Amino acid sequence: MMRALHDRLNALFPLGELTEQRPDLAFLTVPREHLRSIILHLRDLEGFSHLVLLTAVDWLEEGNFQLTYLLSNRGKAVDLGLRVMIPRDGASMDSIHDIWPTAATYQRELREMFGIQFPDSPGVNDDFILEGWIDMPPYRRDFDTKAFSAKTFKEREGRMTTDPEQHMKQQLYPDGA
Amino acid sequence: MMREELKIRVVKGPDGVEFEVDPLRDYFCEAPPASHPPAYAKIVEDLFNWARSHSLWILGFGTGCGAIEMRPLMTPRFDAYRYGIAWRPTPRQANLLVISGYLSVKTLKRAIRAYEQMQNPKYVVGLGSCTINGGMYWDSYNTIKRLDDYMPVDLYITGCMPRPEALLQGFEDLKKLIRAGKAEGANQYAEKFEWYKANQKQVIHDWDMPDYNW
Image (tube, rainbow over all chains, first blue to last red; front, top):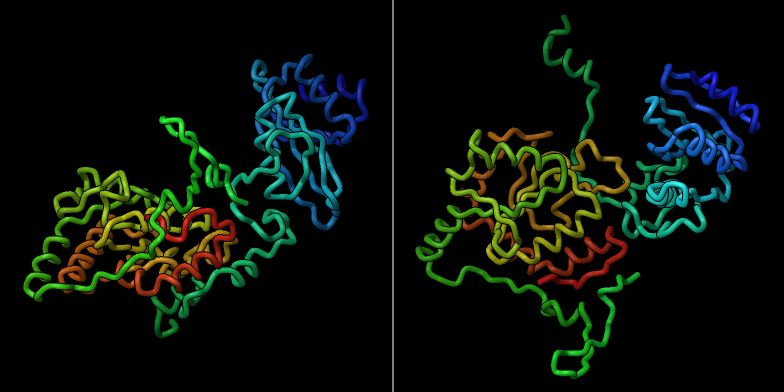
């Protein structure tokens, strides 16, 4: 079924690779400039009426952000994820809040946690989770959360870590048996 | 960036007179908290402390996953009410703030506001490893690691999570501290107010509230 949908879409748009995860779940890489028309086509003609989520993956080594738009066809109970690769430097993407208003919330989160800009998305520059954040967006993979934590929050002396295997061995067999 | 409702604005009263309102100055007390050391003879103070120890009213404010342990504690399974421990909905009616688990910087701001609005004498209990040394969130970018830098903590209850029995034991220990006159957190907060404020402002970067939220 996903294959048939892919064939129908492929006749209309240039598409990337299709990953069929389950019979009712597939991921499709699409070029950035066609995302909007593909989404509108899926929503209006293929019954994908619901945006399940919009999230990002940081491909630091390739210098890309992957945006995943997960759409759901409720009538047929199938999900299709649209993957869009955008360059990491000066990351910016077109907003789809006019297609699904809920997208504005996801875009606000992505702007804060990944630093991806969504011009024209309503309220996108408001604080979402963080308040008074002063460093680089914390979900970026080059953000060193441990170093930031050590620099920002004072530690208490005496914290120690033990290897669970060695520790239990010592506890259960103190003689080394 | 100052929030809109905290900015100075001109308000027209019901009598038609216009006047200026500065929310941060007009809605809160400007004076820093004052220390109230024991003032009466020991036998009277002992009586006070005995009474205080038997009315621990906890602010119903859950900061982290530890708050989930408070539900069985306040319901019939473990029933903390039989020890004179009750939960209250507002800081003005509570005298015990339980920081239940990890405390993010954003929640710290609310916890400080809640603590400062509570009336003396008041106590703070840190619940779980996270309040002691960060616990499993030791390398997190937005949770604090030592609660006692930001608030005067009278007692810590260790564990991740501590069982309701451990909490009951902790509250009994807190009662002993109060009866011995050793739970002087509110006075300590007043005496070292500058130090606490400096620590708080070091991690809260958008300080958009008065220095003392009374």
